[in-house]
Image (cartoon, rainbow, N blue to C red; front, side, top):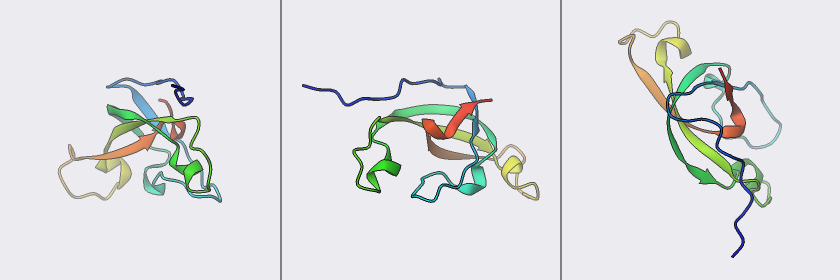
Length: 100
């Protein structure tokens, strides 16, 4: 049995990460409104084929770790009128994250 190539897991629960800023011409799965912002890894969801590759008929390799990242809503929307402690959880693939 062959195991598909996968990127090694780089972050653990509690790691501070920054979502990279990019607007590639092809399909991408990271919302623009979180790009450039710093959050904290809430959980590793697993390792999956890269959906950006699959969307263009690719093989999805190397597979990418997928994290649930917690971001403060007041960081995303400075005019946010809710509780300052409110957060947003977003699933983000590792190749969109860097250590913060």
